[in-house]
Length: 291
Image (cartoon, rainbow, N blue to C red; front, side):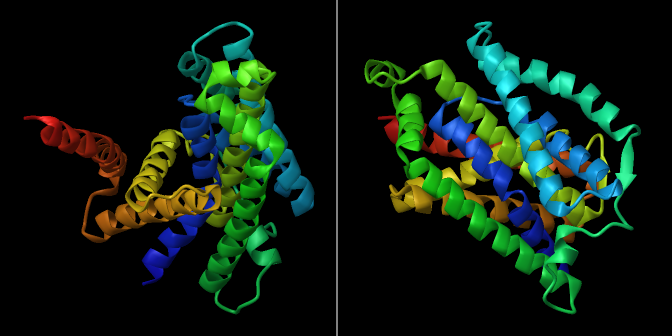
């Protein structure tokens, strides 16, 4: 049971990244690969700040700001230099590997002798219960803030930009600025996940972000499937579906490990799981449409 509770907590910690990918993929229709780099960037900034004795609030702000800068760079490369969003994300992600390694100074930093968020907000004697409590609190606060943001006039303008750029442009919306801000917000959320996961696992590693975009993508696709099946229209419930997708994704990986799958093949299991989420519904639709 403790193993699956740990997977649940990890899913809650990764929900911020899921919400960020939801913004780029479902609102702006942009495949943003910057995620791999901004996730590690948030964790790297967190590790260095905590080791140097920064308070948690300042560390949180620094991590989120770093992710926002990474997203802004991707947005500028895409909108100003007219480079495809996918390639822009790959370029920034590649550059961030060197940036993250420079910030860390070495391949990994342990966080065993510093106070983490999970310790600062502890309410129970059992550490696992504290981690679950902090994860739930984090998701509640973050989900409320993101939902409120997307329901503001600015958030509605962002959603309109993703739905129809020509319509949004006709309404006087600056399309390029919206994309830049959207990528900045999305990557700040991804860096926030790095901030949490680094403290949850008590270390930051330079390679922890490799393939993390697949995890986020799979989580969002599960959430999107829930949205389609249940006919969800309200943004609050859509965000909740994405969070549930993050949790279910981690539960599937935990189940795979509990069944004896070699951890060396976990990345392959992740890729195959995402492939099945994307491919099977399309095959079913093709079979239904076939006369």
